Image 1 (tube, rainbow, N blue to C red):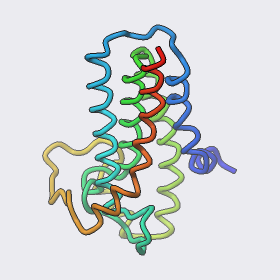
Image 2: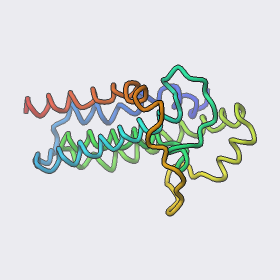
Image 3: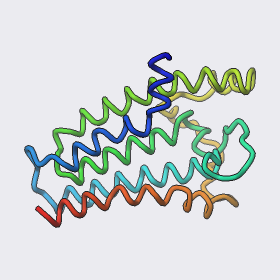
Image 4: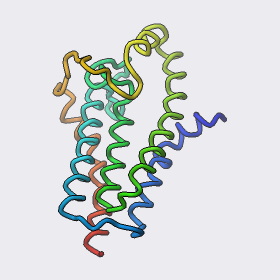
Length: 183
């Protein structure tokens, strides 16, 4: 099994490692609750919003036939759910007050998802063929092109179902609230 395939299969577990560390560690915390929490929760909510917006178009956890998705946030980048996950992780690290862990979490998350994406793109080339190859050539993998905006597709008939499908992400904040209360 290739490292990319293994990273793909274990992506949920791998991406949780910095979050778990941020939760259990108190080393070198930066005690600025009035700053850390609003910024951390804002970053977290941005990531959650990005996931919900992407879910409306991708329908990954929804009981809908899967098609090649090129609308909504997939217009700007090919991996908005993974970007949302990175923002969620970074937001939680900020709320944990371990600001020194932010660059480590970013590099680790970005590296993990880069391996995952390499595997996924090979699979999607086989599944969708030429339309996906065209999409690869037109849409950047991670960073949107400046000034490249079509219809945002912020709201469609899948908004409610997408919000419900992604609600579990809010549970990630609970341990950090408890950590703050206990400390």
